[in-house]
Picture 1 (cartoon, rainbow, N blue to C red):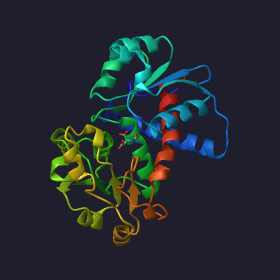
Picture 2: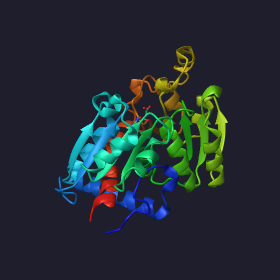
Picture 3: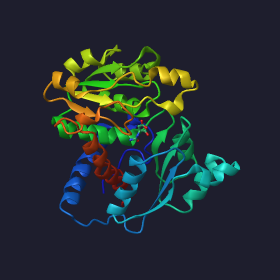
Picture 4: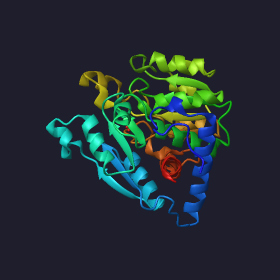
Length: 308
Ligand code: NCD
C-alpha cells in the first residue's frame, strides 16, 4: 500500500506533489464509493482518537464520519473541560496516555505549535486539526480538492482570500498549499488583519504571486475563486477591536452577480455574516459542497496513514 512521505499531518508545507496526488486521487475514489453506497472496511479493528480542546462541528464530525466509513472506530473528547488538562495535565502527558488507547490522534488545541508537541509525545500518527491561529492542514487539502472539482484545475487561477488573514489558520494553510500551483492570490483584509509576513514570503518563495488590498469589490472583478473567512473573535485581546472589524466584508448576491459567471464561492465555515444567505442557492456557492468533501478527503488521509 502506498504511503505518505510523513507519518504526521502537521503543516501544509509538508506535502510533496506525490503526496497530494495520492491523497486527492484516493479521495475521489472514496467519494465515488460513498455515492454508490459501497461498504468499505480497510480500517476495521483500528481506533481513532479525536481530541478537541477548541470548538468544532465540521472537522471533528467529518473525521469521525471518515473513520466510521472505513470500518474503524472512534474515541472522542469534544470538551477540554472534561479531560485532565483541566486538572493541570500537560499536553505531552495527555497524548502519551491516549497513545495507549488509539492508533492515530486528531488534535485541535488553542496553542500554535501544539500539534508538533503532540506528535513528539507519540510514535502514532498525529493529525493537526487546528493549532490556534497557526495552521489547519487537513482543511487546506479539502479546499484544494474542492477548487479542483469546482474549477476543473488549480493552475493559473486567481484566488481571493478574504477576511481575517492574520488569525485565520485555514488561510495560512491554504495559501501555503496553493502556492505550489502557480496561482495568483489577492489577499483581501483590513490593514490590521493582513496575512502574516512569513506566510506571504513563503508564498512568494514557492513561485506564486500575491497582491494585497482592502477592497473586496475590486478583487472580485478578477477572481476565479473567492474564499471568505470569519473574523476570528476568540483571537482578539481587545473586544472593541473585534467590534470595529467584525463587519469588514459581507459578500452579497449583487456583488456575486457582477463577478465572473464562473466564480466559485468558498468558506471553511462557520459563517457569521460574511456571506449573505441568499448567495447560498447560486451555482457557484460551493461552501456546503466544500464541507461535505471533508469526509472523502479525511478518509483518504486516514487510510493512507493507517492501513496495513
Ligand atoms: C475553521 C477553523 O476552525 O479554523 N473551521 C473549520 O475547521 N472548518 C474556520 C473558523 O473557525 O473560522
